[in-house]
Amino acid sequence: MSSARFRKSGRVPWRIIEGEAILVSTRSQQVLYLNESATEVWKVLDEGKSVEEIVDHLCICFEIARDQAEQDVLACIGELRSLGAIEDVAG
Amino acid sequence: MSPASRIVWKGVTIDVAAPALWQPAIKKLTGASESIPAMGPLADARGAALQPDVAVELVDQPLESSPVEMTIAGRTVRGEFLDEDRIWKLRLSCRGHRPLGPLLEYALERARMVEWVGRGGVHLHGCGVASHGAARLFLGPSGSGKTTLARKYVGQTILSDEWLWLEPGGNSVRGEEVEGRTYRVEAVFFIAHGPRFRMKTIPVSEAVARLMANQFSVAPVEQLLQRTMDSLQQLAGRTPAYRLETRLVDDVRALLDTALVKR
View 1 (cartoon, rainbow over the protein chains, first blue to last red):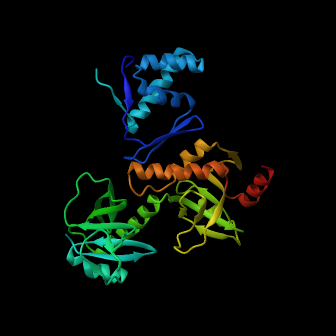
View 2 (cartoon, chains in turn brown, green):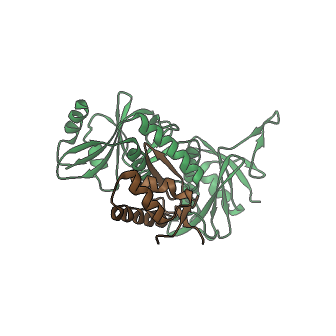
View 3 (cartoon, rainbow over the protein chains, first blue to last red):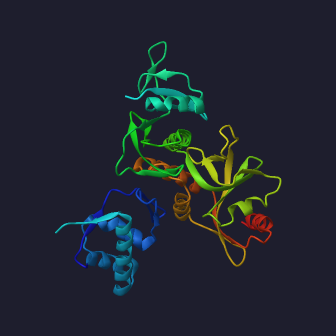
């Protein structure tokens, strides 16, 4: 998982309001409300970073322990995947 | 091409195309007598195009993997939405569907809602109470106490105990009545049961997320969802929103009024 890369699928309407992202699934009508750190994950997904690099990025941005950052990133990616908001980048 | 009728349904001009055997049902439900040769713009006496607000097409064929799926009169109805020349078209499969009346009424209602959302209006699942031109909205899942709470506002206008129509731009709201009066939204409450009365202001981002979760999405189409988010963001940007926990046996109205005055 740590070397996996993801990108936004383009199938989920979203916007960032006051630093927090709101995503709406067109398929399930589910609404995902991301906190500040999850919103940061959402923002950097299109930069081609691997999961490991996103964890590093979060550690720096929010001054949190690596274990905590890894846990947060994996949970966030799991939710985004289940919503259909992101897809794997091949290779 | 199926024969079509142009009708006005609760203030919305709708072109309805349907197989010939549906025409008596259309006439019975809507009183439509005018038949037009095909879907699309008509021309007035000067040749200028006259557009319907929205169009409905009932087709006698199955629609596979369609985004709209509803059970009407015990039958599953599939459909899809198309945006053609800035007119939303709802296409529903009516193959073998009987009776015709409920499906037709559903199609017209759905078309009316699509037209509303297409203009930036929003359907909110909730209750509203109003007085002196201002409305308080109570939103939440079924069973959360919306109706019970609204009924404590004796002497005030109850806009609806199920669906609220938020005007395009999110400025004002009305109940289900087509010609109903509109009211400025004064405050929005997201309610839930709790051990005691507790009211907390929530940020705009959370309010938009909660409003999105309480809106009825008439069509799973990105363009419409974006428009809905625009209106809800405008509403949340200028209207205070609160998370409200309450025991409904409390005198909620008095507690609420007191809490609002303190803020």
